[in-house]
Amino acid sequence: MEMKRKEQDGADVDERWEAFLEAQQTGRFAQFYRCRPMSLLDKKNAEDYDQGNKVIMPQSALERLSSINVQFPMVFSIENEGGGERGRSHCGVHEFVAEEGFVHLPTQMMEQLGVAAGEGGLVMMRNAELPKATFLKLQPHSSAFLNIRDLKDLMSYNFGRYACVTEGDTIAVREKLHGLGGRGGGEAVYRFDVIEARPGGAVSTVETDCEVDFAVPLDYKEPVLATPVPVPAAEAAEGPRRFAGVGFRMDGKPVEQERAPAAPAKGDQGKRVLQFGGASAAAAGGAAAGGKKVGGGEEEEKKPAAARFTGKMYSLQSQSKD
Image 1 (cartoon, one colour):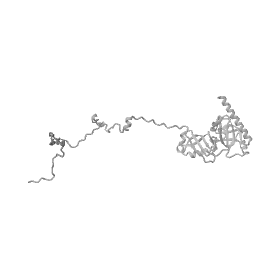
Image 2 (cartoon, one colour):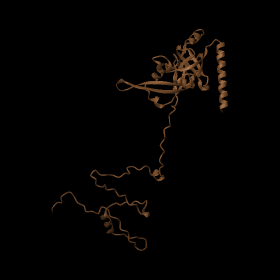
Image 3 (cartoon, helix red, strand yellow):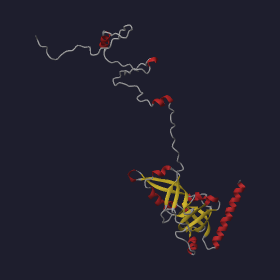
Image 4 (spheres, helix red, strand yellow):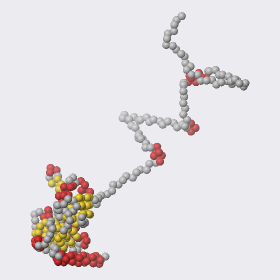
């Protein structure tokens, strides 16, 4: 495995060297530089230069670029000799004040290219011509970016520090936080991976209207759905029970619970008893006379018919005296 990696690294070096020679022969800009971080730059505002993907090159680079036909704003392809496929990206330029043979890179860009912190990393830079960006798809590292109030303005401001973006790059968006009373509350940093760029894998972000889409954050987790509690078949058939608790009185006395009605006898299930009239009607019915059956047979005593309205009648009019 180690032998294959060395062979691959050797092939990458040969490829970059051939690209360097080709650029020199065709009149394009190509040069190898040793990397330095922005912190070694002798400037008061070196921290501002350490944001974005713009570098500081030596004066000789400007002289060489002035002698050839270059596109403005200037952008460059930058490749780390020992970074493999990961060590390739694009960048812009701040100034041409670096020491000869060296180039100052932002800290995040050095990490992305696989250049060790400090001096010593060797990179090859070539001038490039990139199309203007029309679409970018970014994947945030954290869901915290959803809390940004003015996301559009913040993204537009921070993209001013990037001359271009390349698929596979990681860009940093910084937001100044305000504390109580308008005092400074620190700074929040949101990182995004560039997973798609149109119309090419590397695009210019200077003076262009670009549509931006966001993918699912890297730390996003699917919400855990509550497991439904199984309901017994009998309870499901009868429906949910309501007011199944126990009542309490405000004075502390026990609450009299209603007794459940007694279950009907097994033989009387499904029967309903209906009663019309009172007890006097039943008694009066027993005193009624029976009839006889005619037709040559024995006389059969008729069952007494139930008498109705057997009460005593009264008149509201006064009786006349004789």
